Amino acid sequence: MNPDYIFVYGTLRRDANSDMHQLLAKYAEFVSDATYQGRLYKINYYPGAVPSDDSNDAVHGEVYWLHQADVALPLLDQYEEFGPDFPGPNEFIRKRQSVLLKNGCTVTAWVYIYNHSILGLELIKSANFIQQPL
Image (cartoon, rainbow, N blue to C red; front, side):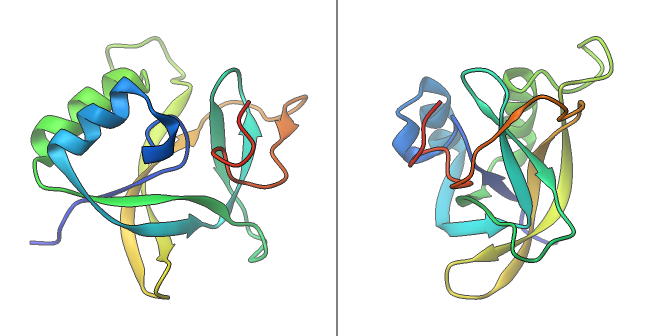
């Protein structure tokens, strides 16, 4: 069985000092800093990542191994307002995506991807929510 990894890039990161990061830490173990081939936008007080075909685009974040994915993912889905309990289309969708770890290895991880139009949204040029908070 393949391990469940999750890539986080916003309020779930360690340095975001959020209550939800504490919840993530309860059910997951930090693996590495990582990047996801995408672009990061300012949605509100939080960011949203969208995939990109440009290999120069890289959203900075962290990868965690979910040692209790069956417990953690439903809680994270609630936080991200993803799933059938929320009116569609959901603001975020959770998909397995390829992410690049700091050591150069690639893993497949869950990523919450922004699921609405990016027209009029501000691009976070650093692609790093922690370095350029909203």
